[in-house]
Image (tube, rainbow, N blue to C red; front, side, top):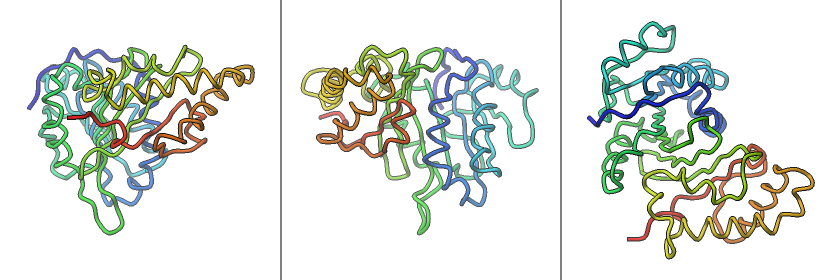
Length: 261
């Protein structure tokens, strides 16, 4: 289910997303009896699936990755890269794995779809996630968009119940102002970056906080980012702390940025 993407991919393109997943979801993966992760729509080359396995195993040694592609030729081309813990399958949004995965990563997949289609795709993918239990919040869907070499990335994290958070991540040395990340907003938000919408107000406030933190630039872009994010917490529900801010990240509750209407 779905349509073929352009397939553009580069080694290390999804490193920011992968590191965030390992940091915030590693404990869930370790607790899982069979920690299966799906790299949905990995593209014309299997680099991102190979890298995902390597990064997940630093926090969950039993993790397995299934690369899923809707284009059969891409699956055939990826098969030589299979190894213990890594396989490739033909499929789409139906997620052709027998068990419910603990993680589905869908990077740069929904960019070509209409905004009106996003909700339905999210629901379908969330329904395939491992369910919540007494000791687990359930599986995680991470859906977002990044530039060609992974310097700027924005993603939404969803659980079986629906959207949870939005994360903005960037290479700070390449950033002029936080709203530069607007062009990498996922499909659910990119067309909502207009006056009157929460995501537009958030980026406006972030730019103002960044400008106010200009004196900290003498200590480096990282210190300026940390100060700007700290100021944001007065008005926006930021869910992470300095350990993630230092990585050039900030995570906000979905409800605060969700589209109106």
